[in-house]
Length: 277
Image 1 (tube, helix red, strand yellow):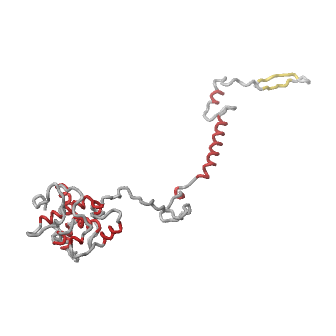
Image 2 (cartoon, helix red, strand yellow):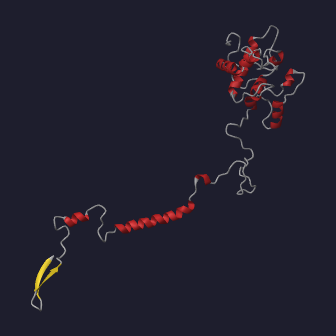
Image 3 (spheres, helix red, strand yellow):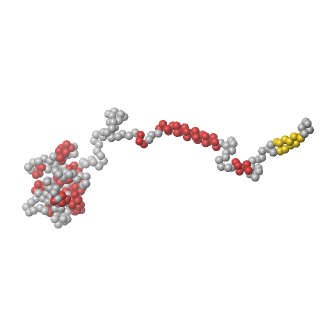
């Protein structure tokens, strides 16, 4: 502040005060400059407020567009099995498979390998009839007319050992370790009907496809073991059953040799000497 003394008309002194000119920025000990450099303090005329305002407006605009498109996970559109859906002409949500569709890995054109049957792949109705209700005749060969007579894979000594291992796990509890139907389950009372004895003449004359079919679809009180035993292991067990029949064959008896290969086709013939007990 600046003070002045002037003389009034009456002759008395009047003291006037006038504001001093503004000091230059940062003039006194850098006071004003330090004040402007404090955090959060903006100079007048700075473009920063305009940028912030523009960003807020753009954000609000984007949010206004996305609010209408919001969809919660529990409200997502989906087709529920066996539930109706007006989107399709037939009103069904589940779409039917294209005619001729086969799941991956289930083509199974080799009917002898996958089913142990001789019939053609196109005759599915005949296959179902043959597997569920086998024909009963007086001839043992005609009773299993649809079952293959040879194992549709090469059987080695390693396959026989694997077949023995699988047999001891899944079959011996009922049929016994040597196939006489005297397993622990039968001994403990589950013997009406009793498990099959592999050394009876009916099963000695049965083709190998019959044993594979029984393991696949079940027979009598025996359930299906298709879920527990793979296709390859079913054929290996079949070969081992034939080996058991050979090892326990009485004098004068014979296996089904009406067709070549009724016994397992093996690089090493299963004889009592190379089959583990």
